Amino acid sequence: MRTLIQLKKTVLIFCLVLALPIMAAAGSTESPAEAPKYIEIPLSLGSVTKTVIATGSLCYDKEEILTLPGDVTLSFIKVKQGDSVVSGQVLARYNTKALNDAVKTLQTSLDEQDEALLTLLSQQDSEQSIKPTMSGVIKVLNLEKGQMVQQSLQGRPAVILSTNGLMQVSITPAAELSLNQAVTVKVGKQKQKATVARLMDDGSVIITFPDTKALPEETVQVMLGGTVVGEGNAQINQPYCLYTDVDGVIDSVPVKVNSSVTKKTTIANVINADPTTEYRQALEDREETAQELKNLQAMLNDPVYKSPINGIVSEIIAQTGQALAEGDNLLKIYPEQPFVMDVAVDELDILSVKEGQEGTVALDALPDVPLNVRVEKISRLGTVSSGITSYTVTLSVQEDSRLLSGMNGTMTLNVGEEAGTVLVPLAALMNDRQGNYVLLKDKSLADDADQTGIKTYVQVGLSDANFAAVALGLKEGDVVLVRPGALQTDNNRRQGMPDFGQMPDFGQMQPPGGGPGGNFQPGGGQRP
Image (cartoon, rainbow, N blue to C red; front, side, top):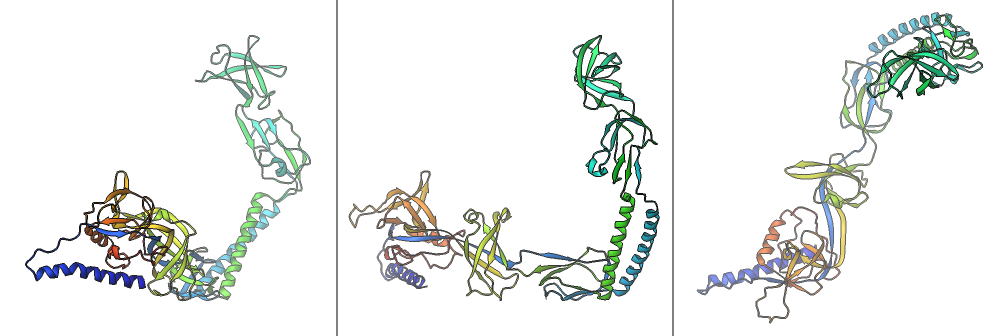
């Protein structure tokens, strides 16, 4: 504040100095004095803190939906949006007439399920058999005596049948073959008559032969006139996989691979069999109905919905007088949690913001109470408004009992600092294709000589609303030249920034912070 008062005093003196020649000219017939071409600004050491300033509002990060425990109709809802609730508080009351009707309906359904279960139970047998649903030749048998059925199968079929009496093999023949041409297939040491069944576009052929010998994936040779023209792995030409849900101990397996079976053939006999799938499903359905009935009866005994948590109601979803189903949404609630603040950070500043950075926020409702904040999350999706892109940054906020959702505030985030460096007014900086430069005072000239400046390129570091840190090109004590018009333009460009006063006579002042080593911390990071 003391620096700000000094700045304003300097501004007043500077304005009076400029006004004196004008006043003198008004009372004289002589021409007014010509304004200086440049203002000399000596450079000192100081520090620049780069800050990002953004606005936003307090909000909650987590929201939960409360759902109804059963089929109900609400008589009334006792809370409104924005109400604070505690665990166990009544939020709504059920229509007891509708609950009574639902209990009667469920009781009738439960009685019917019990009758169906008794019928299915009478059909259960601890000794069962596994039979195919069509005729064929067994080519794969996955059952073994003494094993549990499902443990033995592990999701595989009990058997795989060949249903049209044929196996097949695909080969790329060494000699030309024609469709329906007779050939011979050699399975191990045995030979079988075969036929060229298909000619494929890629030059391969499909050979079919009887399914009485070869097993799936067994290597067979195709011969023409005693000469082998190709070989491949045998496959079932028209397979059928028999799955079963029967479970128990396999007592016997009266069939074997390559056996012919019909619908009446027993594949396996099972003892200590579990109840059928139909019975087990009916039993599960009955248990669900019984539990639902129990829940409704409990709701009828205490026909209210109580909040399971502490929080604030954010939205009422359900309506009274309507039939609602189990799982329908009643309302949304913000559970007890610290506030967060979502602020919109300009695209020019977003790359300076990192998770974990800390700063403060000043709320409009509590302007004199700075609260600590921390960057928790940065959105990767920008929002464009009036040609400017901003990104949502989520901050955790220091807890305070006075905070309310929706309070607006301004965040100030420190994102960088350069201390003990030469500070140059932004008004003194210019640039061309080679980079940034200043006009350095030529100290070799006489004091009354006209200064045009020495073009000196500089390496610029952090900057704020008024100064830039220079890493290379200048040193403490150097004097830069600035046109008065540039100072005025620079001030105009910074309207809307924190009030640092009009640009003072830099020839008469030290950088803010008390000269070398000062802690210069004007609010930077905003668009000028």
